[in-house]
Image 1 (cartoon, each protein chain N blue to C red):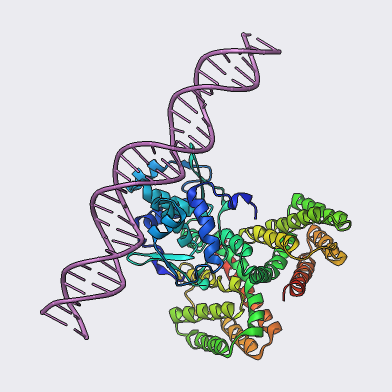
Image 2 (cartoon, each protein chain N blue to C red; image 1 turned 60 degrees about the vertical axis):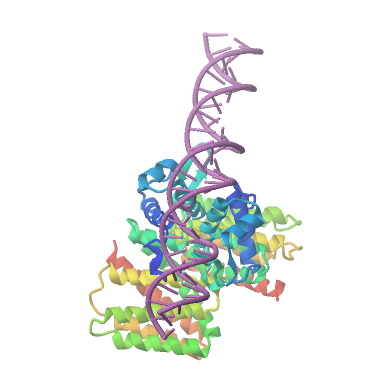
Length: 237
Length: 237
DNA sequence: TGGGCCATAAAAAGTCATACTTAAAGCGCG
DNA sequence: CGCGCTTTAAGTATGACTTTTTATGGCCCA
C-alpha cells in the first residue's frame, strides 16, 4: 500500500486498531464473538476513551457492531468493507491470504483491461511517456535477478494505467494492485526472472495506449491478467 | 444502500458524522481546510469525546488527517476511500452526484460482465432460480408504470449475479449497483416504462447463467452496461 | 397450574467535564 | 542561520452520570 505508516500506529488508538483489526480479520475473534469495552481496555492496557475510538473505526469498517447492554459483536465476513485498504492489508497479512490474493486478482482481471481501454482514449502525453518509461524499465530489469527494480516498474506501470483511465474508482485500485504484485513477489515463490512474454505484453500495452488503440490495449491487458490468474493457480493450490 | 439507518445516527458521534461527512464530500470544507476539535465541538454542541470519535472515522476514510498542534486537515479528493459505502452515499447525495454516478457506472461496466461470466460457471441451482424469478419479474412489471416493482427486481437481479460470481469483491458491489440503479430511477428522469430490449437482455443473462454459458452471459451483460452508460449520456450532459 | 404480560432492575455502552501529557510548529535569541 | 524554548492543540486518562436494552421475576388471567 502507499503508506507504510499504517502498521506502526501514531497514537494508542491506532495501535489498538492494529491489534484488533488483524485479530478479527484473521478469525481470531470469529463472527458472533462479543467483546466488552472495559474488557478490551483492560486486556490492552489502555483507557476506555482509546478503545471507543478504535471501536468507532472498526464499526465504520463493518467489522464489528456496538450495541448497548450487549457489547461489541464481531460481524460476519459478508458484512466487512473488503475494499477498505486497511482491511485489505490486514487480510493479506493474515491467514486467508491466498483466498484474498485470489479474489483481488479476479477483480484486477475485470478492472485493468477496462482501465487500459479508457487510458488509450484519454491518457495525456505525459502519462504515455511514463507508461513507456516503466515498460522499458521492465524490459531492462527482466534479466539478471533484478526483481526489486523490476517490481517497482511493474507496480508503477499498472498505477499509471489505472490513473490514466480518468476514472477515480479505477485509480483508487492502484494500491490494491500494488499490494497484489508486491505480495506475489515478496512472499510467494518468484525466484526466477519474469517471463519474457509478460514483459513484452507490457510494452505492447504502452504502445497501444500511445497510439490510442483502446481495443488492443484492453486485449493485451486482458492477457496480462489471464497470466496473473494462471500464475496464481500454479503457486497456490 | 442496504441499510436505511445510515442517516438517522444511533449516537451523537454518528449524527455528527452525518453532518461532517456530507459537508466534506460536498466540498463545503475544501481540501486543505483546517478545523479544530474544540471549534467543531462548540459548533455542533457536543463534547470533545464525541468529536474525536467522529474524527477517527473520517480519518479512517481518509477524508481528513489529524495532526497535533495543527488540527484536522481536509484531505484532497484523490486520497478519499471512494469505495466506502458511506462515502459513496454522501457523495451521491451531494453536489457532484452526476460525476459520481458516472464513475460508478464505468465501474459497473467493468465488473458486471466479469461477474456474469463467473456466475455462469458457479451459480447454484438456487441462485439460477432467483435469477430467473427476478428476470421474469422485470418482464411482468415492465409495462404499466410499475417502476417501483420493476426497480426492485432489477436491483435484486444484479445483486444475485454479483453474489453468484463467488467473488467477495464483486459481491460487495451489490450495494453500489443498487445505489446507482435506485438513484437513476428516483432522482433522474425515468417517467416512461423501461425499454423492452433491456428487459429481454436480463432474461437472456438468466438463461445463459442457467445453461452455464459464461461467454454469452458476459456478452449480454456487457450490452446491459453499455446501455446504462448510454442512458447516462442522454440524461446527464 | 401453566402461560403470557408488564414492571422493574441491572448491565453495558454512550456522554460529558476536567485534568493532565505529548508532540510539533513557530518564534526569538544567540 | 540554526538551535532551543514557548505555546498550542491534539492525545490520554478518569470518574461521574445518562440512556437504552435485555432479562428476570412476580402477578394476573385463562
